[in-house]
Length: 88
Image (cartoon, rainbow, N blue to C red; front, side, top):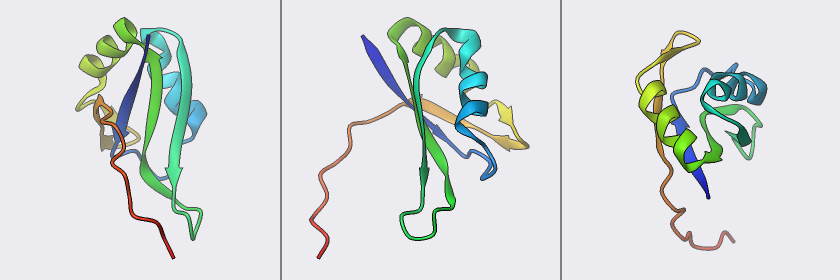
């Protein structure tokens, strides 16, 4: 079963390919999604990586508080998205 991993404090210049390369030593990366600002299109400094359970646990343990692009990463299991009120 796949597990979603939250990756925070990414450098704004990070690409999905670089994040995939960072996680791939721990196992196959199913997907990478970096979040960008809806209005400006600029990176927001966080994203999500999807991996199989065992590999995800190993990646979280190894990469939480690791240095990447001069920043200290925050890596943990992603929480389900809370419902948001509709925008008018």
